[in-house]
Image 1 (spheres, rainbow, N blue to C red):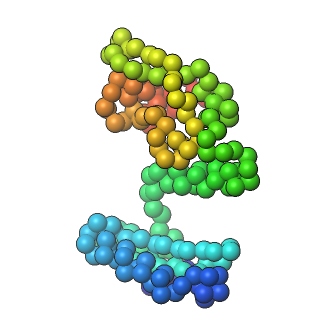
Image 2 (cartoon, rainbow, N blue to C red):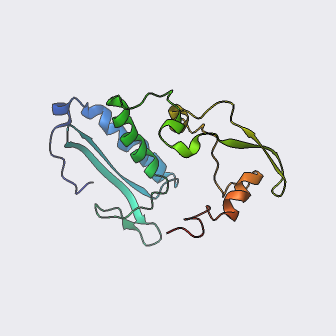
Image 3 (cartoon, rainbow, N blue to C red):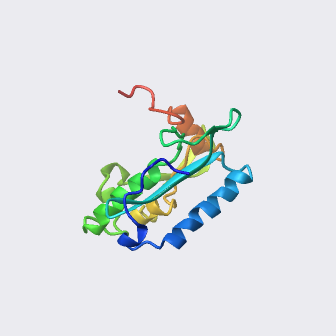
Length: 171
């Protein structure tokens, strides 16, 4: 099981131990079905560790089990961290979900968007519906990635060096 020490009984912080046990049942199916190599899940409330479970392999080929010090490649895990940080600011009343992004990031003012055309002859138009904070949380801001390869804007991003790092001439 887990060698991360749970500090309290989950019910002490309002968590149901029976419900928490469902976590292992659910995720173990993914490991046993070959969809996940392994996992380590912890649940904290009020600054106290109420649940910890790990199962599966850190190295599937060599059958090395998950351990408390296993290093994971987490890819897009900055998204929930940034979302939580932003939601803390929202809870403090520092912005509303319908506030326009340009009020906080002035470079988003007077924005133009790609409407049609090609890489060498793009046609831009002024934004008709300004990006609002809720768009960022729902991934509906209209921004793209350079690696999707679905439209000329993706190629423009790649040409500017935005695919996997800083743009050229950045410090």
